[in-house]
Each structure stands twice: as structure tokens, then as C-alpha cells.
Length: 274
Length: 274
Image 1 (cartoon, one colour):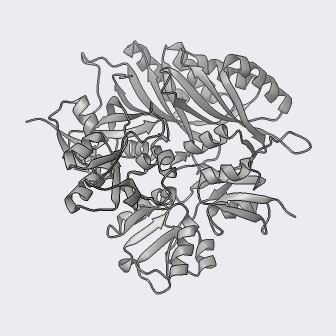
Image 2 (image 1 turned 90 degrees about the horizontal axis):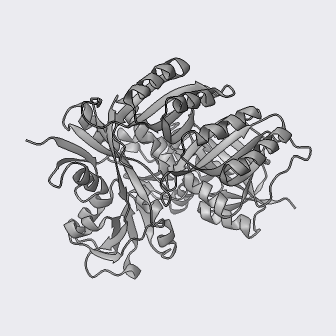
Image 3 (image 1 turned 120 degrees about the vertical axis):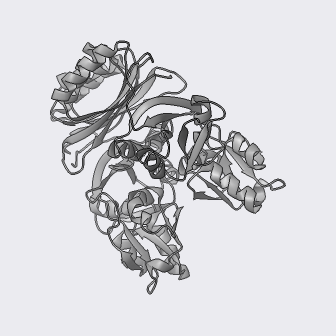
């Protein structure tokens, strides 16, 4: 039997699409209604691996998801990017003028902010998942309400698309992480990317010293983000992604960072998919 | 007459509290129901300055707000931090068990996620502003619904606090920017902090070279965040905050960064309030 993959949301969601592209079309998924539920299904072993959205070019990183990964000691074993395509859908026969409320994931609503400015009569309501709303509307045959979700969700639940590709940034993509409880080691598979977290005091130049080490060992940064640690003024957490050609050099750099930084965690090593 | 300050949300909101602390208790505010409306009131001159939330330790930066500042050519002229205190409130006489829905700002709901896990019967609904929900409940005398807002909002609108300080991270603070259409120059006022934005190709070490310049001119970074530019793979935007003692040294470093980076924008120079 195939392994079960945990996704956020239901079939037809963007997470489901990622699972199908990353594994295969017929992948067996476990539908989770929150990211917390998703991590729990991995920790308890109900699902073998999971798909979790981590950032996009409009909203930036979903920082609470980093906390979930860290607190549950999960490992990043892969990544996948999909272009975002948001569509406005309702029961067949409905018209935009008659729609009073639209339900979707907050991130999806944010991505379609410009579109909804033209329809101030429509109230935006946050929901747990894009496709789940589509399913609910379909099952109840609800009128005057709409969903913002993928074209796949409209097809799957028999809804009409009233306006397609309504997201603002047309070249917007979302990055998803593939998570597991076990870390991935380079046994034949190509491993050329890593996600790190560490803490540093903001002494002048302390971050520069760390970045100089990364450069010395030929690691290229593809992401850097600092987060203040409120309990300790002048102390920061850093989330950094690096790509590299030589895993041995990566390991050497990490040995040095272990000494130079505090609480270094390698969130995972995996294959770069950009 | 005093100048009018634009805030996001209504009186009793966290933005209102910041305006009172940053200016003075009797500050005249213009209530804006979105961040876009807030920036518009500045551009059209209806308000002289504005208060805008920019980041907190749970959700990270509110990146769409950086875009609003940038696109409208606004300048950061100050910053202010307030500890976040979220409270669960409803019409007098209501009990938690009878509450069916809670309305608040998405950021506020996120900060209280753990609390609401204990009450799965309460549906979380995203709204434009924390205090505006409190006002609406009060005006309509609505039962079975609750707001998540400040204690000031409960007092102002006569609601009962059913549970106080329900936010997860007890030492959480939110950072607000003070915005204007004109930049602040050091004329007597202490200026020791700046917010920058620039673009870089991710050639190995290009960011390190920039950070080395910052160090050479005695600028300390208090924030760094990279954002991929989807249209141009391998190109990134960086948002950086620096603090410094010598404004002349800061200017020299910016002259060099102007050459080393692309599209350097100094979003503002102001007084550090940490």
C-alpha cells in the first residue's frame, strides 16, 4: 500500500494539487483542517509525510508554520512551487451582483484584494480552506455565497466560475515544504538545499560573520529572515535557506555555525526545486 | 488646530492607542477601515501623518504594508512598540458557552489561536478591525457573538470581558510605523534608525558585500528580510532596518549601496524607539 500524505484542506485544494505533482496523481491524502492538525498527524504516525505551504510573494513567510515545524521536531525533506490561480466560484446560475459573501482562506482573500475592491457589496469571510468552502457550497446548494479556490475545486464540486484568475500578482507562486518526522540523508538522492534556524545577539557584525562563513564554504542564500525574540531584546532568530553543490562543504559550514550561533537547528536538507 | 492622524480602525483600536502614546492623549484621529484607505488619506492630504502596524513576533512582517508604503512613496518618520493585550468580550450577561461566533482582525485571531482551541464550538470570523467589532456588538446589542480587542475598547463600548489576555505569547509586542508624505531630516531631532529596501542578484556573496559595507560604516542591522521577485528568478528584494550613531556615516554607506544594489529606496530615517 502507498504511504498516506497529510495535506491542509480537502481534495481539490492547492495542497492536494502539490501532493499530486510531488508524489503522483493517485496519491492517498489525509485531509487536515488546520496546519496544527497536519503536524499532529505526522507526529502520531497517521500520515508518513505532509505538504505545508510556507511562503508566497505577497504575504511572505507563514511564520507560525516555522514554529509548528520547530516545536514538533519535523524535518523538511523536499519543496515544491506552484503558480497560484485563484477563481471566483458559486452554484450554477448565480451572478456576481447577487453574491453577498465570499468565504476563503485568508491568504487567498489577500491575494484577490484588488478584485474585491470593485465589488464592495461582497463581504469577505475567513475560512480554513479554499476547496472546503467550494465543497460546502456545492453540498448545501447555497446561493448568494461564493468561494475563492482552484479551477480543480470548481470542477470537482460542480461550481460555476464567475471570474477566473482574480489574484492580483499574475506571476505569484506559493512555496510548499514536504515534511517528515525523519530527516533525509544524501543516499543517492541529490541534496543541494537546506533550511536553517539559529539565534544570534545583534552585536555589530555578528550576522555578517556568519554569512562570511556561508560564502567561504560556497553556500548561496536563497532566503533570509530575522525575527526579534521579544523576551530577549537585541537577540534575533534567523531563518535562512542555502543551496550548495558539495554536501561535505555544507556539513563543515554547519560545524562552524554550531559554535558561532546559538540553538542552531537544521530544519532539513533536500533537493532544490527552483 | 492640531494635525489629523490617520489610524487603521476606530477609536479604541490598538492603532488609536499608539497614536495617543506617540502624539498625545487628545490626538485627533481619522478612522480608516483598511491600510489602503489609510495610505490614501495621506496621499490626498486629508491626514498629515498616519500610524500603521508593520510586524509582530507571531505573524512576522505585514508585507503588503511595505508595498503600500513603497507604491505611494510614503516616508517612515517614526516607530512605536506596544505590548499586545487581547481580550475576549461580549454584551454584559453573555457566557463563553453561549458564544457561537467571534469576529476580529485576522492577526488578533492568530495571536489567540491556542485559546480558541479550547472552544471548538466558537467560529472565528475575520473582520477589518478589532475595536470596530466591539462597537458593532455594543450598538446592536448582539448576543451569542464576541469580539477580540483591547481593554480600552471594552471600556469605551460597554462590553464585558469574558476572558482577559487570551493571546498566546505573553511577551508579544507589535511594531507600528509613523508615516508621512515628507521625509524627516535630522534638524535637531535625533535620527538614529533607517528602513531600506533594495534589490540584488543572488550572485554568491552579493548580500555579504552589502552587509560588510553596513558594518564598515558602523550600521547595526535590527531587521533583515528577503523576498523573491517571482518575475526574475534569482533576484531578491531586501528589507533592512539599521541603527547608527552618526548620520554622516549612514549617508556615506547609502552612497555606496546606491551603486552596489538596484532600486535602493530609503523608506525613512527616524528615531529608534526600542
